[in-house]
Length: 335
Image (cartoon, rainbow, N blue to C red; front, side, top):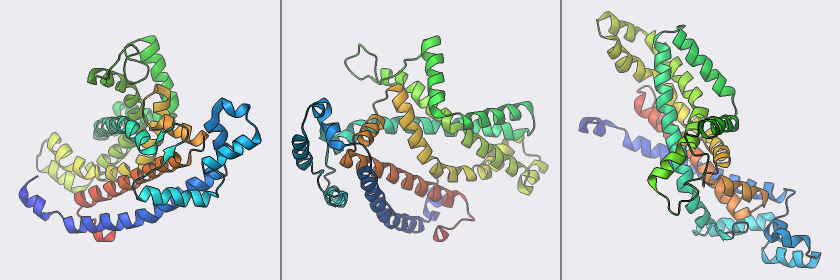
């Protein structure tokens, strides 16, 4: 990017848009955390019995009641929510009752692996979807176009856990070319980049395949529409090569709709990552989320839900910023 282009970017308008979104995010996160505590309080699961484990089977009602008081579970959920919120604003996310660790430590140990999985899968899905969409849009109705679109629609309807189980059966059990799960080999005593990379292939590939149809179909539609526009026809009439027309004109405008897809796919990406992590025993936040939900671990459940909500809001903000930068017809003041 040249210095002239940098100086022309509307940094002030972008900052104002980001500021407005952050102000909007604050009440949203408050409502989300309150809803988590309310729903968890109505859950049929007993957090005290989940904390005590098998010892709760032989404990009398008085012992369980004292344990409930020690854990603060005898308070209304509104009081527990307010105590957690004020502590969280001060940097203390509380203590996980089911994992017996500080919530910040639980998230810190697992978030990096979930972020790695989602980032790799997202990049692979965007790049592969762009290539397939462009190839299909070049010759609408061709055998390649019909094959790509049929495959995209089929994958769009396939549940991510089904794709994961199919990948395990094919690549790990039948062919034996990739490890089936975990972060490292079973006998390994340390985490090495090579082992992480080999164990990442299957979960990241499955998660990328689950997101691939939307990017492929959006790029195909956008590039196909751009190829039929007058500026592209004029470029062809001037004798420009097909490669220049495709990459320099059609692809640039055809990718604009994909930018809006970035934010809308974040919730699906997070949900898919939870399922993929569970199937492949990937040490991300999936296991912690499941345990927090089944054990009604209020602090951990609220922190993980807040984190997922913040990721969705940031994804939508990123999509709007990218769209405003690359589409001259869109003004940040109108967003």
